[in-house]
Length: 198
Image 1 (tube, rainbow, N blue to C red):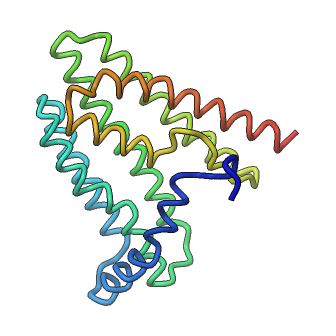
Image 2: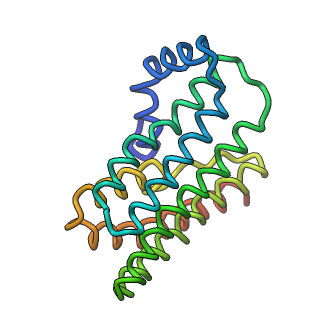
């Protein structure tokens, strides 16, 4: 694979595909529906958001570490049951947006409450960029173009946000990286769409 074609998220998925497949089949055999996994994962993110809003970053990070892997588990269960409908994918993508909003909204609330307005602006910039990254992919998909390029896709953003929550001194650096990186990634994807649709 050429470096230009390398997508970190796809590489990680390839490394864990077999184990996730086994887990998905096991959960399906005991009667777990993929939508149940999706909804429970989102509930856990809301719990983490409440904790983060109180300024308990590390505890919020711990809850996210437990919750966010479920975003991959629901897909594994769906594949195990041979799910053909598109509702699950739409539900998953929609709740991912809510999860992003909860995490950065919780950070923004905390920064506003503690009068850290510079960090508040960075958190909002990161949230806006993250939404733009996902929106461009969705709209490009409607045009028949799969867009996964870019430095800070959602998986990478999740790694960064969990890292800065678990290690709070990294918060300023992490916010800057996400505020700039997400919007740069949106531009990368827009450029990719432009080159492949004109």
